[in-house]
Length: 300
Image 1: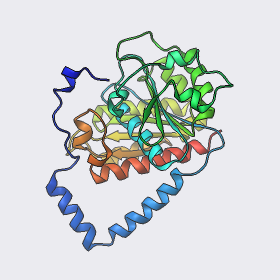
Image 2: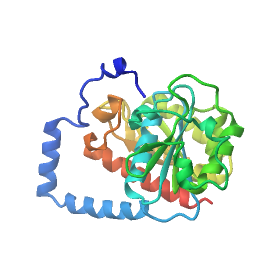
Image 3: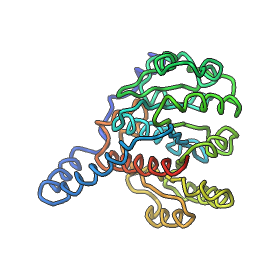
Image 4: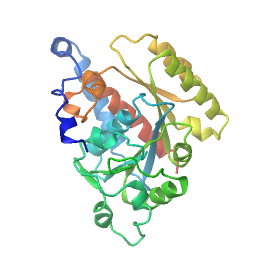
């Protein structure tokens, strides 16, 4: 929820790619066989994302520091699951220190928070009862914010665990936007979730710190690194590193790696509008959502 005066400072949302690049890409797809391959891939990806679950899947998204694209990736994942799945999808903000997930998702009002719901949800409550305390989003998605737009009390691990256990049975997929590591709630969320996403900027310091975290995770139970995907977020149209070489180095730890290309719409901040994303960004986000969901299915 944004102050009206501050909201008025935002410029008109722009598309992820300039018009010239969009036209060139469209022409190439017409005269080549890539369009058919793309449709086939999207069909397979959609089938993966629509797989049923026996118990709710919980996916934690975190990073080493702010500005790594953590909240953006959480919003992209939640939006993708809500678009492809028939069961309800929940996005949880486990960061009460004025996180930006409600802004990214275009939430108009904020009432109950993650900490509030820990003392409200009871086993006999129906999905309709529970969603009465949540913020409704498009396509059967729901948001549980970490604050009401003001800095509040920190979320402790006990409260986080109680609310996540209580909500798991109501939602097919839950995406958690965590605090940055090494915060305690973030570590608990990583351990308790069925899959983990670690975001990092596609910069030298970003991949260096991420590699150190992955090495630390190698010393934990094997399922931790096996169920982790790193997302390298492009901060500029021409990154200052060899992104593919960096991705290979990170993969050597046993984690999966996806690259989220630079996108003008994402870089501008504000409400995420998927129709304004560049085509490569949409495809990358969908592939990421499918792989993370598959990893979550391997863990009970």
